Length: 310
Ligand code: BDR
Ligand code: CA
Image (cartoon, rainbow, N blue to C red; front, side, top):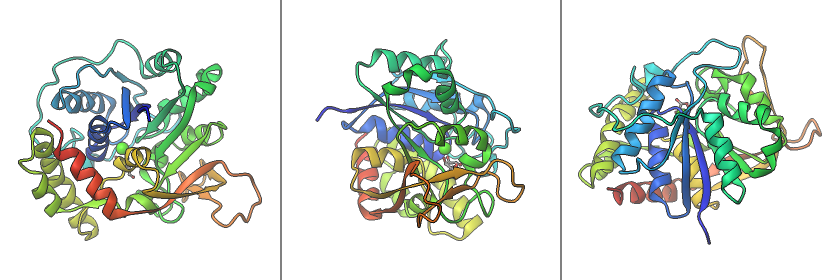
């Protein structure tokens, strides 16, 4: 089977960085471009972090294009408290070897869509601001998108507010546009990603396996400690890497088609993904929603991929 061609739109971020690495490590995936968005930290930082991670992997051939520096309507709120001011707290920061593309994220995605010769999967692991631009500004290119796979949302509880998950909460207006676009959409939310955690023991396993393994171990040193201190969990969810794992092995995550709508105004519930798990509305499905994950196989896949990188 030929590799699945993707563009990864992200806001690195510890788990975004690991998602980039998993995509680069996997023959099932061909990463045609990385686009960045403001989210976990500012756009300047997320873009530099994407360049850094690709440098580390020796993949300066993969274009990186910067997109939106804030949500469509709301003011940007970051998750620097979790990821550090730089977005990648833990390992020593180094200067990227190159600058980002002269294209914007929207222009790079358009170029990839038009030149790929086959429909492309857009994977989004940050706020959906850039993807909303694609939906609104490239209507004639929708048929060139095979699917949009996002990390975001939750059927049940949120993580940034009791009602909402961070990526959707940061830019609910963009999420609404994406969920209403009519393009095939898969939502990997917190029900799935909270199962997909790595611990200190996994960090130690990766330490010394190679440059990428060492880097991920140092990312985990920070990320695991944050989740232990803040939530009392045994490890840190590697949310964003689940999108890529799902594309590599579609049997890892179980999904169910359901109607999902985005709350954009309620002060208490803004950013909530209102998912009709029991079809009580009778409304047609708008997304395939992840419900469970085979955690052991996910961890094995991820550790093996990272430890075999440079
Ligand atoms: C999401 O929020 C970000 O902090 C992570 O990178 C992930 O994409 C989880 O809610
Ligand atoms: Ca992210």
